[in-house]
Length: 191
Image (cartoon, rainbow, N blue to C red; front, side, top):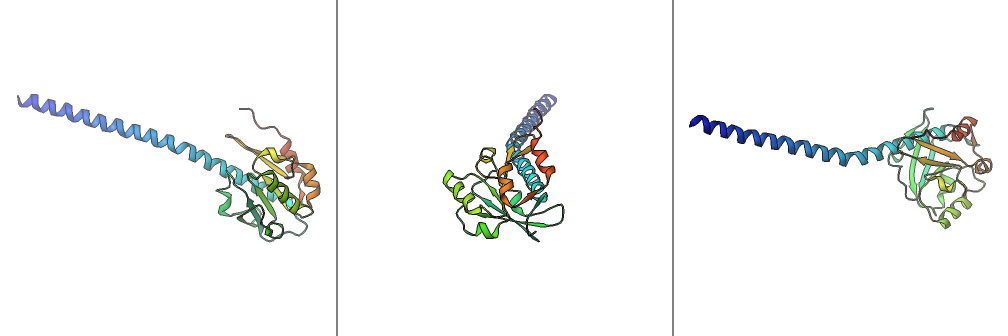
């Protein structure tokens, strides 16, 4: 009789261990699924940072700033990593800050602007204020490239690419190395 009780207890204990293991496994799977979107967003933000820093490193201003001032304007999706402040491969620091689209200091205190979602009027006023000034502009979405941005990002799951508005580049006063212009012509890899 003792053996039967001991076996039953062992079977019940085994079920509890199995149940606990199953719960741990399921909670781990749920935890992993909840982490995937944020890690994908982090990966995109890091990729955008690399592309933006690459573009900036191949740009030349009429008077080269010792510290590049990048202003983020409007709501953005991919600037979390960029806002931490970075250093270019050349060693030049990049100071990054957020400003409102109508902030008058954009003209005098920004060497480059990273443009998020703006209304048509905000975008028009921003580009009107930048006209004739050596300010490099990068739009987070590729739909604004015909409106005045020098570069427009195309952010995908696998890579970040960009388009160049040659007319805006010619009028900006910022010189862009031809290699960057060639890169924009390459088609993204087929998925």
